[in-house]
Image (cartoon, rainbow, N blue to C red):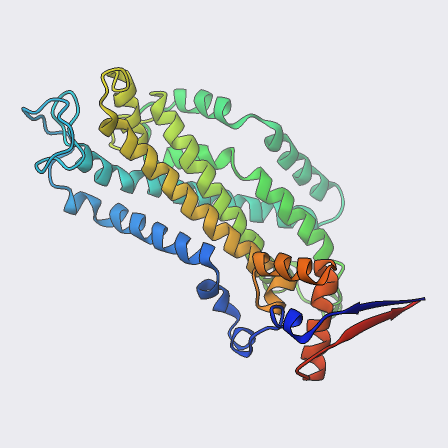
Length: 343
């Protein structure tokens, strides 16, 4: 029985990898609109986090005579009920918000690497115990645990808060890395390294971990997203360190002083939009990482949208749609008319 999967040269052109994309593995950064938009948005907020306190027009804690003033030339984002400048609070609050998110993301990613890779590589009771540990933390509700832990450390430093956030955020990445390590440890290159007498640490750090960089990057991005979200929620509830200006602190004071009922939208809308844009930028970056991880998208030099469009045109699945590309790349020809599978 023969199954003919045919397509015209024009249909297959959308799936043909560009030579430049094949020659430059990181061309996906420029090609993907998700990554480009995410990088631009995120770069703006990183700039504000670094230089926000310098470019802030006023002291965010300074009281002023204009109370609950709407946006104007003197105060671009209006003032609070005590005359404090909202724009200055927004600029100064960007630094601690992103700082805690990235510190928590780095700590949680390091924990997930240590626990996840070790649980997947080492067989026996040690690996099972590490896997059980990650399963336990995976089912613990994050926000209630954060509320309990932070209640014991009022006015804690950013490092302490980041550590608490990392404790509830590392388990998911550890589970994913464990599953990937279980698959990689059976590969020929790992078995060859073991046969040559390489130490376990060298195999983990030089053979297995480099093949999991994209997964580690995705885990880090999602952990940062969760850390920023939880930290803003804690400050909004008044549990975090509200003595430091952050976007969550702004929302806390706006809610405590009935900004919504008084119609002072300029007090709570800017920090809410800032949090949403940062999280959106990180999610866009994660979409780009996902395209880079997917071997079919990377080999074809296309994105998910182009792959789905080509599949609809040819009436075949994405897996079969990439098969002519593989044949064309191997044969070095310009067109592939059909692929036959004989049973």
